[in-house]
Figure 1 (cartoon, rainbow, N blue to C red):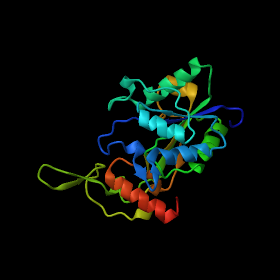
Figure 2 (figure 1 turned 90 degrees about the horizontal axis):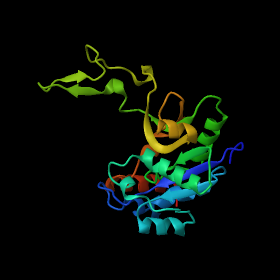
Figure 3 (figure 1 turned 135 degrees about the vertical axis):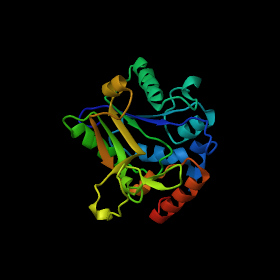
Figure 4 (figure 1 turned 30 degrees about the vertical axis):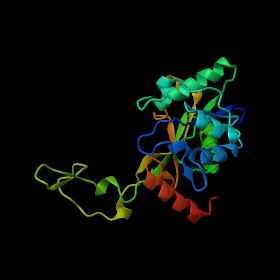
Length: 238
């Protein structure tokens, strides 16, 4: 709880994965992938209830072994490739409501972003709840080498053309460009009534929580595991 606001944390982890089979329980630097998110979320000063939403018995068993509640098995229709994460979260919120458990804020903690730390949960919670207008906050990272000013399209004749529509290609200094950011998966937080109404985290009352670009690495393919393990070892995370 933060400033009398009850906070629900949800870790969604379905079985199916085309890029990396069973990725949510894939061993990463000595423990299942999902465990990295569970352990950081458990350190939070503010999350009142943490649950895992899954359709897999093995995932559920691993989550419970780390002390996390798995109050239900996710319905099959919410565990397909086309199922929307927003519907998964609404299902979790409604399930708990029926049990008499109501919350003010929702924290989505994707297990595919294991470089997240507890500070990336608690700090944005404080920022959002302290803000007078905002109803959501999502993490972003700065675009560097892939700044839009450096992007081009390839025409039918094979020649390049500036993506942003400039009449000619210019070589610009990086320090002269505006800072731009991209959405990444470290953290998503929303005021629950607003989330239920909009069914999403992105709208005109969404704040940005800026993270270091290295945190944007997510586990989707085998090579991602190699990269993230190297980053963890560099940081001394065990």
